[in-house]
Image 1 (tube, rainbow, N blue to C red):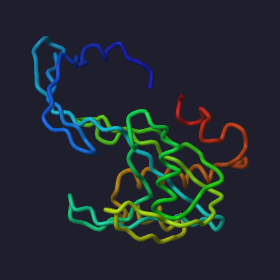
Image 2 (image 1 turned 90 degrees about the horizontal axis):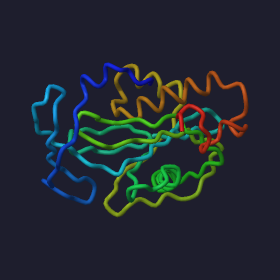
Image 3 (image 1 turned 135 degrees about the horizontal axis):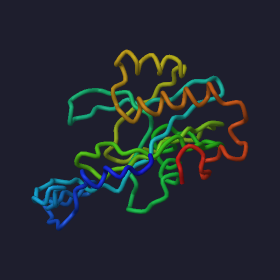
Image 4 (image 1 turned 60 degrees about the horizontal axis):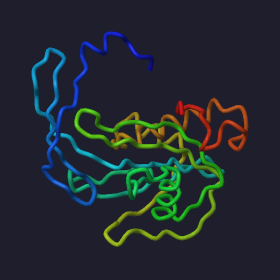
Length: 206
């Protein structure tokens, strides 16, 4: 989105930060920021390496979803395969390929980057890269030792309906499913055509 001169009137400026908590997945800091009117304020910020999420579509037009129990909300959720970057600066596509195989046992012959989004910009630095994965071949899932889930494959149209009716509530999954459906519906060239590969600049402005 283009820069607007009015942005300077609402910009907060980072001044300093101190650690509150540092864990295996996230790092919480308390920041002091300067407000546009010159006053100072405190912000609690979660630092996160980022993540990658995958919409895997097979030759039938079926999407594979994973079922997990999310203890933070105490709900069982259907989600697209996803995982966090192992370290800051890890290539998101490499992460996506790893997570797809770990969680579903699939490898993909074609990868298309759908979007690069922020999950909760009010307090977290996490950015998620969303990919469409096609030309799937089955290998073997190998979950992390503390990871428990199972998979199902349903028509992409059914997944879209589940998003619109609130059966799928995970935000990255909702966005990925809707974007993938729109992309596949509008696509008039093969997914492996130049400009539609995962490292292209198409749709993600890089």
